Image (cartoon, rainbow, N blue to C red):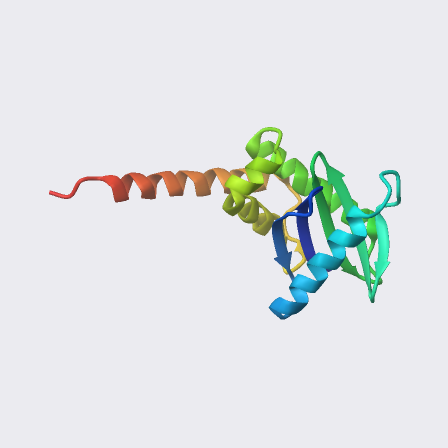
Length: 155
């Protein structure tokens, strides 16, 4: 599985998270993002979650008010991609406790960190939810330690 991009956007067409695994200019990224929103949001609710767009397969899934949308090479497995999207949502749920759009908006750095622990270069890096959770716990502990250190009065 080699993802080209992963986009999270709301039903209202607001981009909430984007991760690009292939080099594109900012202009191209904006065009792809706009095209994905138009394509996915314009589909009837009971439609198939797979699309063909240009030379890519598009796989998307809606969770509550967010759409998780991935672009893949033509030879990649759509069902595996659905599993990857679902695993990312499970990781977000585990960390945030039933993740919602506001969690992504106000804690986007954590959402990116979880994604980076899970995917690297568009490929699954870590399949264990436990390992990702441990890594998140360590990162949170480090952040808290650094904040305590930075807030200590200097004599």
